[in-house]
Amino acid sequence: MEISFILNGNPVNAGIAPTQTLLDVLRESFRLTGTKEGCSEGECGACTVLVNGKAVVSCLMLAPQAEGCEVTTIEGLSLGGELHPIQTAFVKEGAVQCGYCTPGAVMSSYALLSENPRPGEGEIRAAIAGNLCRCTGYQKIVKAVQRAAEEMDDPV
Amino acid sequence: MSLEYIRPRNVEEALECLLSRTFKILAGGTDLVIQLREGRHKDLPILDISRLSELRFIREKDGKTVIGALTTLSDLLSSESLRRTAPVLLAAVREIGSVQIRNMGTIGTRFCQIVSLGRKGRTRTMPLPDFLLGPCKTVLESCELIHSVSFSTPPVYQHFEKLGERKAQAISIASTALVSGFKNGRLKGIRVALGSVAPTVIRAKQAEAFLESRPLTPDMILDAGEMAAQEASPISDVRATAAYRRKMVMAMVTRGLWPCLKEVGESR
Ligand SMILES: Cc1cc2nc3c(=O)[nH]c(=O)nc-3n(C[C@H](O)[C@H](O)[C@H](O)COP(=O)(O)OP(=O)(O)OC[C@H]3O[C@@H](n4cnc5c(N)ncnc54)[C@H](O)[C@@H]3O)c2cc1C
Ligand code: FES
Ligand code: FES
Image (cartoon, each protein chain N blue to C red):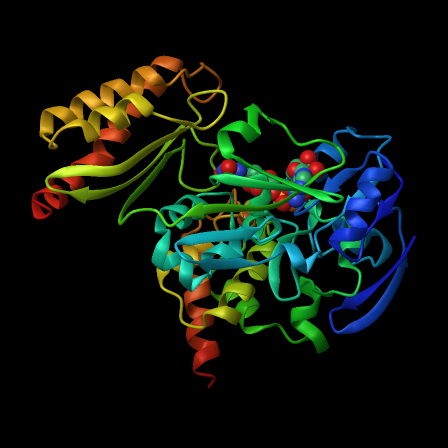
């Protein structure tokens, strides 16, 4: 079957099998391999993307469900080759080690800051509770989100 | 994996499909897509109801709340009216999965008191205990949809607690929800619900009756905790032993009841 949706701001079409997941289609049809596959069961958050502005795990969304939706992936945050302030903050705070969880964690942070530009630490931890990281111990990710919030709120 | 996917435009059309043959219904997909990946439901076509906006609503009227089956868990958390009337429900929802799972998962597949099932030309409504038959088993027939869930506004005192192995994304070992009103030094309309300690969610009815039978005392709270623990029928599994679960029911029910002593005092 054929689906059309808006991918990182551009209208796109893809021929898919109905039970392919959005994750498969992003990675395989569109070659957007920034979105990672970790567990395939909704637990790890590596595959997090935004659908109509809400963070979802793309491994549990069937591709046909994206019909007509606006889908934003990690590639959509750094359009034009400039890192998004959240990405810059992750780099500056050392919130990236192996990097496998990073795209998902950045997307969850992006969803959070879009709705709540000045989150408290508890709110940040709740927002990234669905993004498992085996390397950083989370402390630096939380710091990065705090830093991004400050810098986005008060651009120099 | 099944190869047919249908997205009906409205509830009417969905019910017509369900009457014509057997489908696997897709709502938020957080259970179903995992099952599909495991190779289950191979031969069944998928009926994607996730966009039926007719089934996505929260209505409150005359002390009764009705929630459409496709309302997401995140929708519930951003509802002003639920924040006012049913914080116990929101406390429970906040414990489910992660932001991503709550953005996708729907209420229709979950708790609440009364369930309405729609089938073409007929709707049946029943109390939750009649709907739930056992783990992952309900009375839902293949030609039916869950339409909505409803409950009367719970009394003022509301308490929820979930025990898991860690804070984020843990499947619960045991959970308790408790609501009560107060009158003349007694609990009134007390409800004690226990999760993950029986084949379905249950109410500790003996503890409830005992707690309403006379003015509340600290001893009664301890006895009620014991009673609730006896009413549970937990199993041992990878997360905890049955004995531990029983002890936790006792601990959680009493913990939920202690604040009532003060409130009861004020109602005298
Ligand atoms: C990572 C993860 C963490 C989780 N954590 C928790 C947790 O902490 N606590 C907890 O309780 N649960 C948890 N869950 C389970 C989750 O809450 C449920 O998967 C979710 O509520 C199911 O809703 P859904 O809309 O995604 O259902 P779907 O997967 O779309 O459907 C589930 C089943 O219900 C049927 N169905 C759905 N809607 C209807 C309807 N309207 N009428 C008839 N049949 C219908 C489907 O056919 C299917 O069989 C977790 C799941 C994941 C993946
Ligand atoms: S791959 Fe989707 S949550 Fe892990
Ligand atoms: S940086 Fe390695 S998993 Fe998070």
